[in-house]
Image 1: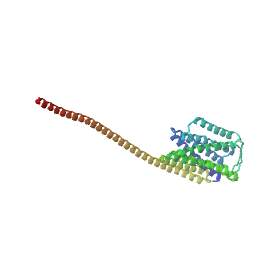
Image 2: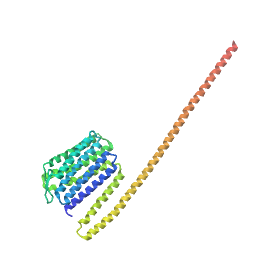
Image 3: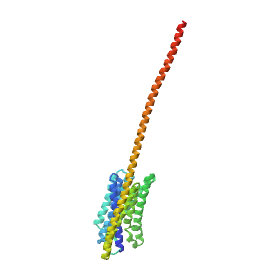
Image 4: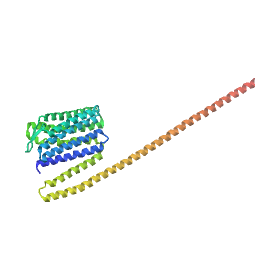
Length: 348
């Protein structure tokens, strides 16, 4: 397998992982706007990685190079996610529309005009001749990333506990993505054109960015994370095994890799099923614990009610007793007074 096919396959795997992240985030974040928009970040990251993979594997290098600019749609989605997560919701829809509009315009011009990429060489590493608006696109990318990091750092310094831990993962993820992209796509090519072949590493690093952010959002749901990671691993290996038969030089090796793929699918199915069963058992146990807790709370409430009733009756009995004792004391005083009056009458 030559280097181009290998890089293309790796980027397709990254695209698949990001797409899996996106569907999971959309499914779990239907009622959480921050998580829902993070799903769009994962989706556009998948598109970005796929276009770079296409640039290495397919013909028409100019089209696929232009299509990589669709990755700019990652940024407004991420800024919107940051707005919701940091609760910076003032004029949110207007600000989100502004960033999305800029990304859409850049993507459209990059795909349909030579203003961003004029032409691409037909030999590896397929050097690009940039257009007059390409620096403007870079300014947009840097501005978006800088704004997102600013809001995250601002929220980080005033947060505590688990939220602060989440923000650490967010900041680490975006630092890996933006730092790697700037280094391999911006700085190193200035010193040596040889580094231009590593420009696609920004697409590769997107899976770390999305993955770390994804983990931070669902860190408390460790069992679900384990299931999802297992599914992603099985899926990624499955994709590799699907592609391998087309790369094998002989018919025997093609048949062998197809057989291995089918065997892998069988074992992968049983592995995922076993993890789901374990998760189900944990959920049943958790439900039992919750039910027992409710029963104990109910018993506690009943004991509390019984105690209140006993206390109320005690107070009532004390009042009655006090009244009876008071009456008896009054009777004794009256009898004493009567006796004194009788003695006085006898003397008179």
